[in-house]
Image 1 (tube, rainbow, N blue to C red):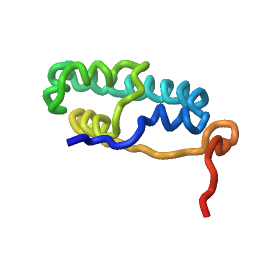
Image 2 (cartoon, rainbow, N blue to C red):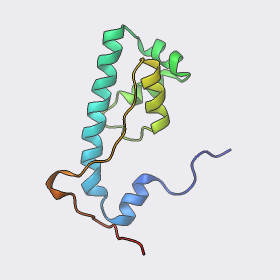
Image 3 (tube, rainbow, N blue to C red):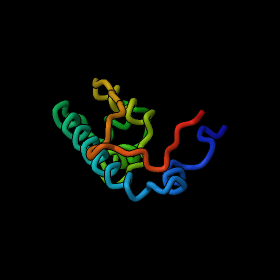
Image 4 (tube, rainbow, N blue to C red):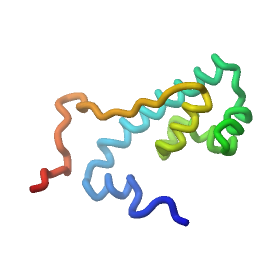
Length: 109
């Protein structure tokens, strides 16, 4: 059964004309997440293999989590890595630096 329906997030960003604005921020956020995961692994003495086993996944997934350029991580994967490392996961939206306009977004009636 297919888990994901519809176009990719990247296609959505392209359609709205904001891909070039969002992509660099997403990569910076992924760099921060990857560093947090790596630090937690080091603090707890957890190897790639042990983390993958604890998450019920492959080492390849762990390597992608730690790759700052791979911004295609899912909330499910982040939740699993947090759980495996004994951490919580907090996801929130905040105003973008510089006023955070509504590029490509419109209010609906």
